[in-house]
Image 1: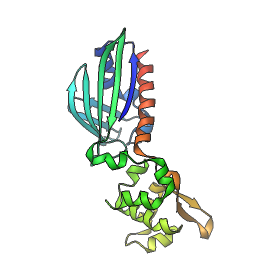
Image 2: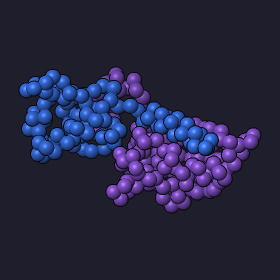
Image 3: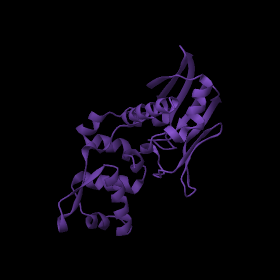
Image 4: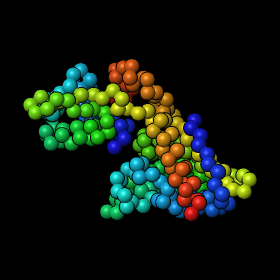
Length: 136
Length: 95
């Protein structure tokens, strides 16, 4: 499990809206599969996708749960693709004067093999690595 | 393209399997596949841009070889992603 959190000086409601409605403004360019700097992202109750300026739409995940302003649960396609999604849960919790945004990212049974691979494995033997990927 | 996405294609996985034994040129690879040389070239470009293979030599001896460090594990990849994403979210929240 990967856990990342950040404390924003915003109410949960504002933090939730920043995270979702303004996702195009913070989602890193390096992780936009459309490779279009002008693409727009949508994270809404029933869709999570990137739309390139030529109209192409690339699914980034699946929204499993939408509970504003507390929680979002997603199947996440970045890095592993739609057939082997990972699981992301984002929670928004009041803390001090702001809101703690916590991201919990973990594998699902479909992506466990990809998730648990470690760099040294690759260095040690391509045989092992390729076997893991190539024989599926 | 990320290495894991590049690996999502069966032809590219097969190319890697061939390169596992020794570096090969585009022509040598194309001779082993029932698809056109331009198609092989396209797959090679994807593999090279994702860091899974790298060019070796030049001119007539121009070959491609497997790049050992090419496959960053997915967990590390996503770890980096959230670090930069949340840093940007925080910046945005200060506006």
